[in-house]
Length: 214
Image (cartoon, rainbow, N blue to C red; front, side, top):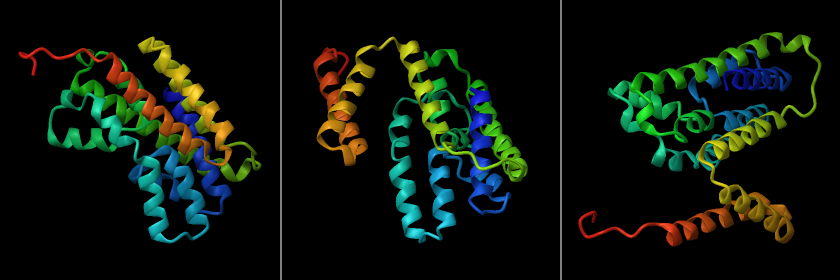
């Protein structure tokens, strides 16, 4: 995962300098915002001098999924207010994939924070390297696919860890259906269908509580 974060950080650093921004924007964005997919979008917004309201709306829309991450992230295993604050700040997709798909009892507070801090350092270091040496690297087409490729790997690893076969099958079916009925809004339609499918599945498969559990 660390190697993936470094390579993705290199891509982000390259994108920053090739978009006409100064190299120091890379550690500033990576260190203070630390939201991979939004950071890639933010570079384009900054280069286009987008209004602050547009940037804020985009940030909320892209990072809205983190609210659901918090529902199953083992934050209760983290000790200390400062550590909890950093754990919430550093809750990215990669950290969630590593820490929320395995039994929470296997993670100590130090291990959770160390994992997130290492991922953060990989991302920032890779970005700085890409920004500093990006001027000697020619423009590369397809850099935006790097993030998609990493998400695909995370999804595969999550399925292998949980052995939940129906989930990816339903996700693929929702995506294909959205592609057929609404090709221009495939993400919104596909994700909405997937959420409805998950809620229906939970409703049908959950175990009823006994009076003592209630």
